[in-house]
Image 1 (cartoon, rainbow, N blue to C red):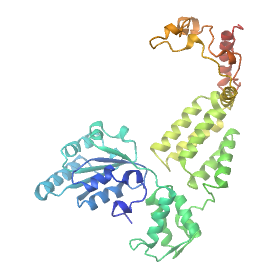
Image 2 (cartoon, rainbow, N blue to C red):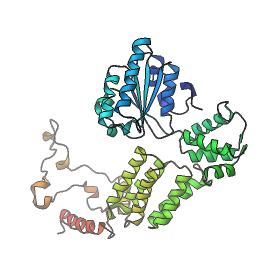
Image 3 (tube, rainbow, N blue to C red):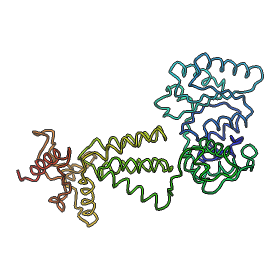
Image 4 (cartoon, one colour):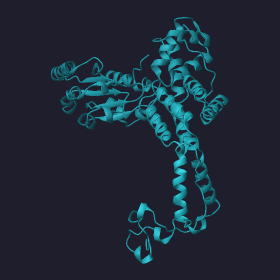
Length: 414
């Protein structure tokens, strides 16, 4: 079912439009070098095959998992020989290129620099961390995105009817189609693997057939409906209630149902400040790291990172003082309590600022003991307002004590 032309490729519309590098590569005879970076099953190998097929170039594939420098140099030598004898160009496709060490990547440089091959490297990891700079700087970096539900649905529907697929020998029930879409998680290859497994069991592919073939129960979950909102609500409330087991259940439920992991990660990051806050500052770091892991790694492995963050958030001491503080400050601003920035705090760097009195009288805290000095910081209208009221939970107890002393000193009450 691999697409044969760019027009047959589903998804990646941002890379396939007129004037894009891929289109130029297909329409031009000039060789060029590309890195295709994206999650599994998004079409990296497919695009390399399409480029080679449409342009009538030789296609040579090397897997970085098993190939060494000797294999790379042999492929390049053959490509140079073919180019010199027949004028035919070669697409050298290196899958999992991030697994190549520095010496192996260095071996690619002469071919890329001298345009002996059209080099296409595929990677699921950030090439800025895993690919040597000289090779990366000589290549275009194209980022592939996970396929949408509509794209996966189209892949499956095409496979059911196409002569290269099931050729209409099987029927696919609508519910089974949606279950396969959820199971795929944006991975076209996975969706076709599951469809093929189900087709081997029965002519009429139902949800029950898919469950039996894939050994995964159909999770009743509509990402646009009540289940989406109910489950994420229960997930957040379980973390807030410090029940790590319940939170992990809802996390697993969302992952198995094909929920967008980036959505889950965003909710955890919000929770880390909204419900844990200063009671455990490391919670936000863990949540942000998990969100980055989702981007770099993708599912299923990133589910471990999400679980790590969920357990941290659930078991951390809780404080909503941060969200209450910004809420109270925002409410005052909306009520019109704004006022003028005190003159001594205004920007004094531009010409003429001194004539306006900007910065006059400002006391530089680092010049004073403990880095503290009494002076007005807030506009007069809100000078006595108290926004951040820390709890005594976890690490915030120490923050509360310090903030109390600082606030009393700044306000002149100690």
